[in-house]
Length: 115
Length: 115
Image (cartoon, rainbow over all chains, first blue to last red; front, side):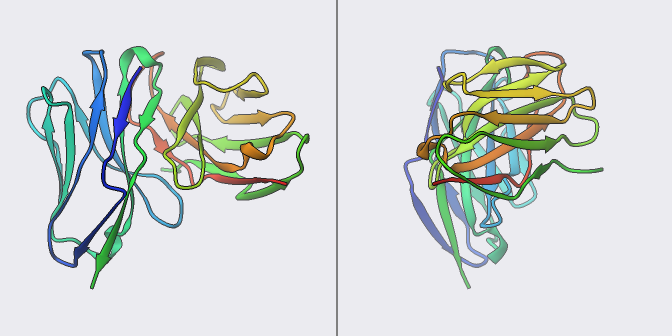
């Protein structure tokens, strides 16, 4: 079974500043994928970034980047140049090839962006 | 490209009743997964459908059942509703060939309230 832990229930950041959201996970699988999803008040879960475990290079999508530490089973999300539209609940999730596509999510981190 | 759609948006039912939720997958996707998200929690995997068959199931009782149709759309049925079934139900679609961790794209969800 997989577990995902997000230890920061809430985080806040000033507009244009940088913030890092933490995530740790546990799995005995070797073939797995990690995701960050964003869920604004509109409720729709939006993919932010994806990281394949076999890739050493950290994934990047515009202002969003991850710090993937495989040995430590850590997968943090860095948001640079924060914008008001980044305010949302952020979920870290893991999927494994043997898990039939099941995603296991963390409890989420509420991000507030101050103008 | 059409995204994942779900209907209805909101639903109110009474304990003991039955409910059907619907999901249309994103164009080009053949796999649908369903999740239950309680207020303030991360989504929990219910099951996944691929080629009109259940492809994997989370820790949910048999009164949670589903269907997938030839056009890849899907239904989630819940019988004998309980108060704890009140939640946001999310549908996600992806493309795969059997068990996979292809990226899942989520719909806006159906908010179910059981009184």
